[in-house]
Image (cartoon, rainbow, N blue to C red; front, side, top):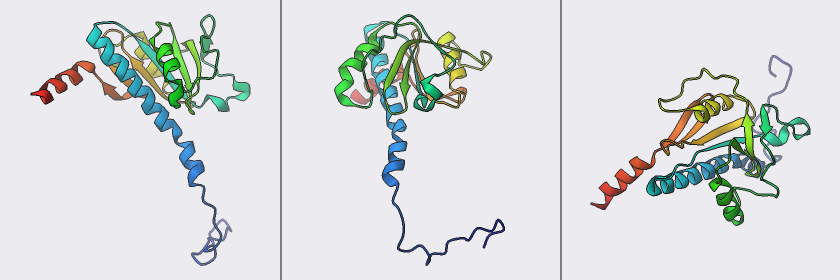
Length: 194
């Protein structure tokens, strides 16, 4: 018996009785796949923008917003009408056309995605609580917003596509943790071709 009075199970006491929750816990980690899909999509847009010499900036927030009381998420404000008017999910391949269309628009504000992949909003203004966070040189308001918003408890990650440099970054807890630059990718492709 432990100090707190609870009996510790021994290997023999629970040999035959158990519950396998592996599926439930694997489903709870689906957000990692959603996060990777967002990153890959932004990298694809970045590469196309770089090749076509176009400028396109994006800010995408992935979070656990379905647990908010009455589904009200503080620190966000809709700019005009929410263009997301039907169920759309980045994790489901049949929505690929809708997702690409949404991400290709030049909306002000952020795109908001719930941890299960459901796109719940676009044209969302985000409150910046910590504008003094360090961001790499050349980064602007979008990146300061991403760094600040990524520190929230209900946010899993914030992804940015820089309009100036086409660099894609994933932000967590106030700093970027992953980065893709299309010019480095093009250089690598040229070296591999030789």
